[in-house]
Image (tube, rainbow, N blue to C red; front, top):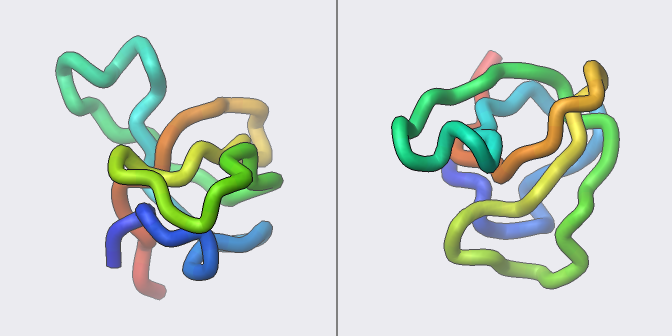
Amino acid sequence: MNGQNRKDIFPGLEVKIVKKEDQRTGKLTEGIVQSLLTKSIFHPHGIKVRLEDGTVGRVQEIVDN
């Protein structure tokens, strides 16, 4: 599942995000969603979230557990 639809993402979900400074390299950071920052229901580059450790980025993957 990708992270483009807001309805698929919620606090407590484990995701992989790309931080703004890592967009060129595509390096992913894994963490737990603390809050959703994108207000729209869809975003082509991924819904922007804040992870529990404070990192902000756009969801690229939802980790299946």
